[in-house]
Image (tube, rainbow, N blue to C red):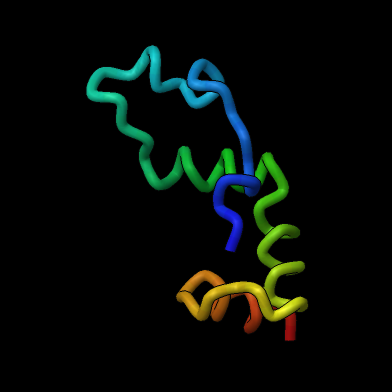
Length: 65
């Protein structure tokens, strides 16, 4: 719902400035997401019914049951 406030990293922190082609791999995104509290953010969004129905929300909901 508020993607701009989920996680703020400087360009340097993302590693994009050192990466040829400026690509973030899925694994790298997940590591940053977890390090920045993404799971708790998504859990709170699900509980407050602000999360969009996606594969990620469905997976987290099934883990929480």
